[in-house]
Length: 324
Ligand SMILES: C[S@@+](CC[C@H](N)C(=O)[O-])C[C@H]1O[C@@H](n2cnc3c(N)ncnc32)[C@H](O)[C@@H]1O
Image: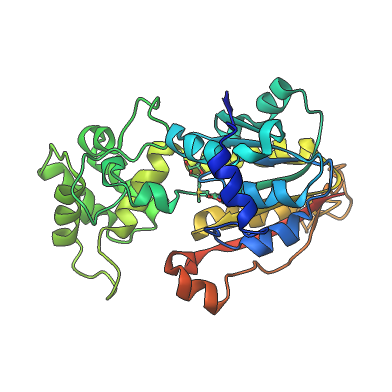
């Protein structure tokens, strides 16, 4: 377990900002507004990253609010630990997947929570660190693991999968229409060790990519999702969220691509209905009852000012639901 360490420098710089989180993460105000942190409440940030949203939740839940912060990445946890040090024991940080939410809550002894945040995908910090192998902008080993304990890297996938499985992966997780041509080119030129080697191979095989978008964008997204089993984790956590939230508690999810957003949207819609029988069935036999109420029907997007400040925010979509 990582404890937010008391560090006087962090404490001073936080206090001197008079309530401003210094580097605001995506949709920061919207998240605080959606979760409505209250004094003494218990909150989970399942994707702690650099701790920006967590900082806001802890500040807004003063006095006495507590936050359990999870991340797979030990580097992110160390940075967040410094940032949240001033909150002392109110911040509990653990290296774990949000897919194990229930287990993490059991370990800290929380029966239920008032709010949960998932800010999905990778952080700017991870993308901007060449050695992590997430970016085609720099040459580095093809890694892409959030958690260095994960035995499978992106290099393992591109160098060992059969061509048809690789094409399937690119199609399913990257929505890449030229998945078969790209998979064929990759298999022909194995072994591939670095991000640049892969990006160049994909660029040669995928000349039809839209202007302004690097032809390897979808391939890199697909590999990252597969390495970290991101969609499985999201599907696994949603029922645990419903089980953990107190009535009136809220879940807020920021998705960065349609695959994630679709899973969240469909889950929220399903859990907002009292009956989930097929429409052609005249009598309800499912005994399902609604457990969530959608707070926003359409996802909240960053405004123009935020996108101008942070162009990576442009694809963010926030959905919020409340436990009934
Ligand atoms: C977009 S960043 C979060 C940024 C954060 N909200 C902030 O304020 O700085 C996503 C983070 O989630 C982490 N992550 C991704 N999948 C995860 C999972 N299944 N469990 C825990 N952390 C995960 C990544 O390592 C990354 O640090």
